[in-house]
Length: 118
Image (cartoon, rainbow, N blue to C red; front, top):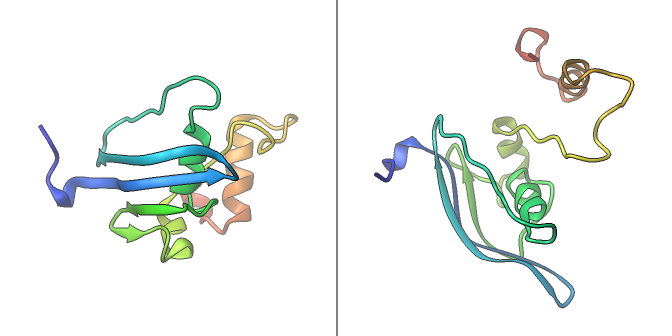
């Protein structure tokens, strides 16, 4: 059963991204309901990281719409970031810190109040 419009946390329509002649993401549509666990699964080079970077307002799409909690990620990236958390798989963690310490550190870095970091 499809969630009602007000229950959608993430809505993507027509999302596309190319790097030169390489089409990394082509015309993706998806909806993720509030509270739903959702994963992107596929082989290396399938576009998973590119999609996540666009959802997190780190990478601008060539085409398409991304709404997170009703906020247009493309038009209002900084406002959308208030509704997002993104930690890349590589190059984003300090290896000498635990996962919890990394989350706490990045939360402090981005101004998340101490009581909301973990």
